Length: 584
Image 1 (cartoon, helix red, strand yellow):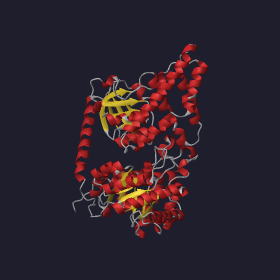
Image 2: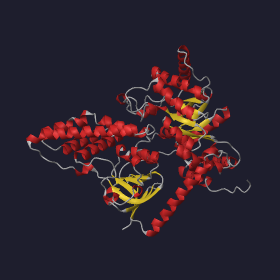
Image 3: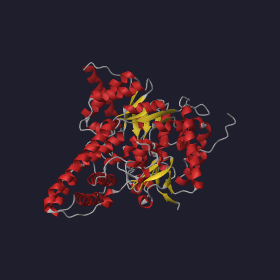
Image 4: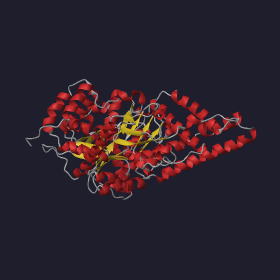
């Protein structure tokens, strides 16, 4: 029987294949009472399982490429959880006191910890219970003799090519998702998760179609059943009939053909139909990402998120280590500009978990943290200045909210130059300073920054979060997170207009910049500098090449006067309709 499930499409694409179910280990744990003579053996069995999982996580992390920054961060979080006495010592006490099996003791303690997380007010910290559950799952699989990599034991895997297998699970911990790098599965679907969950982020980074939040899909889908996964619409079709199957096969072929055609645009100049030049830059996280930037023909690096160099380690990277990383990017771009953002640690990328704020998004993060740690900040600034000898480098500071932060940063750069001169170390002289506009206060009080900055970059992700008072990591309010809210668009338009009037270049480096459906909106608003994930550049370039800014500008001005998000979306849809370009 054919039926359809609706969830949240978090990674675009269409996959057709057979279901491969992954077990949900904590649902299968029995309660056993042990003889007294076996209790210590059970404790030892538990300790051995924990040690093996630790070793597996270490091995996974060591096997990963340096460019897989987000994956490495997730693995380290799970490794830290496996060092928590609440999770690794309390179960041993339960085994001894109650004479029970290790699996049961571990699940009892997990349930207790999950309740503790549920009582936390902060949504981000509350969501971390998922990490605890995923670690427990991994230990239980080890205890039950079912540990190992995805794709080894499923009935669906027999006689079916990997690229035709669709993973179906209650949840997928990042440690299991690493296996997607080693295999070629078609897609995955999960019962739980949201647009900003670990699995969603990783799926997008690996370009794997995914639908999450299906609430019970694993219970109704059987091993080996034929599935269609539509990551665009968030739809799963189980046992589709021949007509639907043929329709999706055709759509899948068309999508693959379009992606292939886009490669032809790599060397095309990003000029609109009325000859307006647009810069299409790339966002990167680690030096190895430069290859993807070059493969997609980017005009430079518009955002180097340096905080990923600081994560997953006990010590701060040294000046020489940072210098080598920055130099590799600058030299790799061969004369094209590189915008290096100073570390935006804090919020969801905490350097010191022990001092995380109650609400980390509003705490000591971004430039606030940098200025509170002048020695650490100085190390980074000296490394950037040294790398600037090898090509055009610009410094971008995150989370600015007042003029003092810009003035203090310029003073810190001057001190870094002086330190390098005293050490007789060569550095680049001509470096521009820019600021991230991602706090409403910065957008509203723009003049103070226009006088002090050489360029600006709008971070639409945080700007939306702070304007609407919605935690973008909280699934419960994820549906209210709307970057096309009239207030958000007003702030973006205000910054773009202010920058143009003052002659200060403004870019957008948030998710809006990489969405080809919004390219014409942004062009009509006056945006000329885009920065996005490298994989999005060619789709956005295609929109640029088929747009006429002269026609778009008056249409967008009318759109910005609307106060209803639904009407705004309808007008954006109209902007994207094919225009009559016969005059050209």
